[in-house]
Image (cartoon, rainbow, N blue to C red; front, side, top):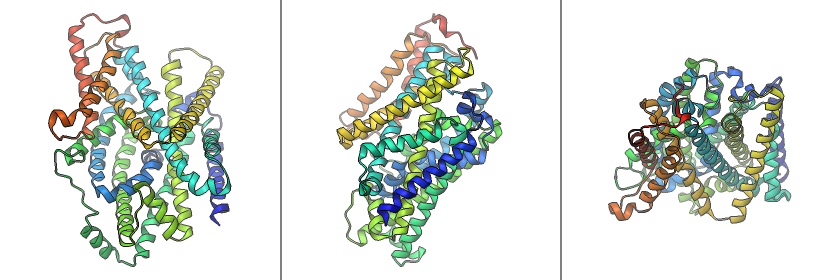
Length: 490
């Protein structure tokens, strides 16, 4: 049944996305593609951001990681929660004050064109690598369960998924993404809840009995209190807060939907509601992981962490639940890619081509926007093929490592711009934003030798940002004369 039904569900799902795109992209201009005409309902943005924040990798990997790390990940989530309030009440007012289509334009207003270009460049690099790795990992799962049984090869499945995403994002942009992400978040959460309830019923425990069993098997422990470990509470909490500030508040993909809301007050309301909702949703993912780990332990199963959720759902749960799991996985896949490709198009058009600096007619803007959008789709496809050809999980870890390091300079640049009134010569900025991540990488690789057993965790992002900030601050005193393009416009 699944051989026919799963592909059919995928195409019906895609048809629904196309229908949404058709109605939301009517009379769309280049401006509405980037900003949604500032008419996005705040509650839809808040709900849809859940799907964007929880990618297909999170959908599979967070539950799978509970067997080894219990609920230690929730320490990071608590840090996320704190960080969202900084985004809401420090960064969003800044973006609305300057009416930004691209958030990196602030760096030009405050520190000049060179800072602007490097900030946007780091985002483009980070988001391209991160989104394509997530796409590659999820297509691997879909290939195994959906495409391979009907004879579709990996490269064909990749092209099909990319073409689907292009079809519903090419015209509408943010106006479409806000609505499609809302739909996809609903299906993802539906799959999460259905799987939890079904597993509880399969094990024939009451919720109280099940929770007691999970606690006895140490599958619900939240706190890690060893300072030398990478998952130590304060490393996770502080690191999580700055991950949110950098990877949400300084990320064009995450912010373009927030700044598409009409007023600052509604955008802040969206961010606060989203932050509380994410606490609940992540707790549900970890609860699912605990139940899956206990189920595997009770039945003598030995699956790799990332295989735990799909394998148990496919093999031990009713076929209808597995179908809902696939729908949830698809729903987790699309928001992490459609938003990325739209944000990358917006950033490249505004920050690199210079839509706001050049007086281009609307027809030319639409033409260039389509070319850029299609080009990123081709780049995504080629990178997925490259990862598949290399076929080594170490490259996935490397790509995520690179993407993580590139947000440190963004954090330092924005902090320097917001917290000081000083200026830095244009020629110094590229050296600083390259040197800081390299220095952090050296510290990370030699931490055991320098500090005898210490392991860096998520605090590395903060160290990266602080180092960038310090180098900018020192340079503002050492180099007195600024370049001609460093006149502050703020």
